[in-house]
Amino acid sequence: MTNTKFLYGASIQGIQGFIFKTNKLKEIVGASELVEQICTDLFYNVANIKKDDKNIILSAAGNIKYVFNDMQKCKDFVKTFPKEVSELAPGITISQAVVEFEGNELSNSIQLLEDKLKAQRNLVPTPFEIGFMGLERARRTNGVAVKFIEKEALDGATLAKRDASVNNIALFEKMAGFKPKGSELALDTEDITKSGKNSWIAIIHADGNGLGQIIQNKGKELVEKNLFADFSKAIDDSTKNAVKKSF
Picture (cartoon, rainbow, N blue to C red):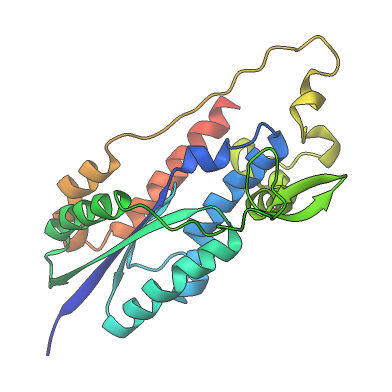
């Protein structure tokens, strides 16, 4: 009886470029929501798993690592997931890699997976929307226009971001720990500065460094104790709790 397993990894390329491609707060919020959906709800649905699945190593911040026990399920997921991502969030580029391993060799396989993902990121992706020269373009992004709103041509990515921004209350609640009224949230930067008293705006960006190295160093212990899912959840919880405390 074989004990072969398949370590799957996915990484979203150019997250900051995707989120901040336009200068509209509504679209920035929507883009952030889309990135989270890709690594959580969309991933769980396509893989047909629950968020507390013990084979989840990481599913946050534009990165996914998951252990498939069945080769065919892994193959099917690799074929299907990029299409689902492109339909949910046009303009997103995702890199994928798989490492086959035996038994408890997971910790050693993580570094090999990272090397494969780096190689995939160096490949030039084919644009999802190429378009002909005669097609209408969105002026702010130069993407192929798919819809006009208030006489402005919008491409698929911008439209998806706007649609996702309706969940900005849910996103705020995750960070602040309470649910605000819709009227208390600004959807555009102009809404924040319209009084003239708060014309200065600060954007705070926080990012965790060296997470991959931590996983490598602790990989063997996490495998032996079957704690990878708990480890991933602890990272997510500690990040959210830190933001809530700051609020």
